[in-house]
Image (cartoon, rainbow, N blue to C red; front, top):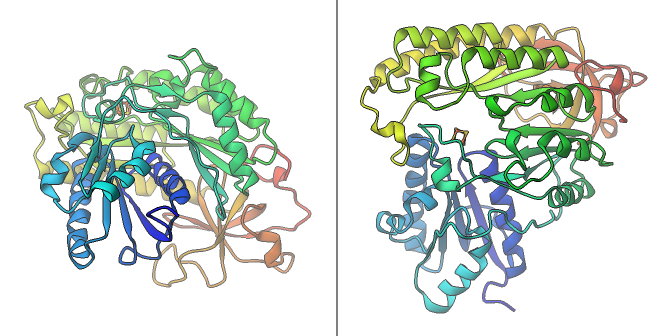
Length: 472
Ligand code: SF4
């Protein structure tokens, strides 16, 4: 019996998919100590807050969430609160001053130390801080138990060497480090053995995977994964445009399991701003990459990230951003107002854009993209798309433009679009269980989703649009 037998754990994750992956691994890593997932925050014996420092808002969210935990600790002095992730790495001991009820602060390269830190708290009653960057870049992977999802994440790289002037990742996640291919293959095999059909490979810049260590190049890793039985779809994020190689473009053409979707963050359409951001590509280079991707894979969906109101951004620069959105015709995008990050060089740039200007530009950008996304969705009406079934559709409400009828199912296309569908007489519920690939004819388009119905079961998924042929 460990001192933690029959205890419960609640992991609260803020931020990106990499944090989601870390959160899953934390939960699996604590299982041997007797921790099981709690039903709610209130019933947990240990709360792990997995934090994000990428934007000011995300960091504010962390401290506002920690504020909510103060009362829980007061009512239950035995509750242990641990804070990990990028804010923990950035703030270290300062978290203990701002939130004195926190017991453990552990950094991005100290996740594997969490069981030992818990034991130290139990043995000494003293608070613990572990934020040295000398720990392992990668967690010891823990195979999933009772996996119910059809999609899983695998982190293949940690850290970044690019030093974009607005970004804290190089300081909170450390230098770029790649995981050996054999470890990645073993992790993906463990996921597929547990029922996962789609895997998303994660890293700050997967396009430079393996370069420093002399491992295989990223397209080669994709080819190895493409050959794994039991895996139906491969996705990855995020790509840096400067490192998007011809080999990767060819992989979109050649690999049946590689989904026809790329997330290619551009951040700004203005060369002047891209230079100040230290992005190391121009608008023309980016557009050339998009042309080559579309030549290799005409149906590829393209999504991106934008920062609005970067220091020094003029109206003319912002117009360049709007024009590149029109030119590329993104399927969707994420856009944020610039915010200073204390550890990032741009925090010291003097020509800041006023908040109301940033807010107005962001709204203009989002309105433009909403129109483009809806047009893209409408262009799919009447087509048959292969959908990987996730499970029952989530929203059963009316009044929302994307609302779905009761008893609808949900899944995603290879282009990563949500499709809600109801069954026709050809299909029984057991035919559309999670993990199945089925052909769905698109009947209606909405801002955030599509709606359709499965076509005749005689049509194989490989006959449908939007999925390269593969065994169903
Ligand atoms: S590529 Fe730039 S934005 Fe992306 S993680 Fe690295 S430094 Fe940050």
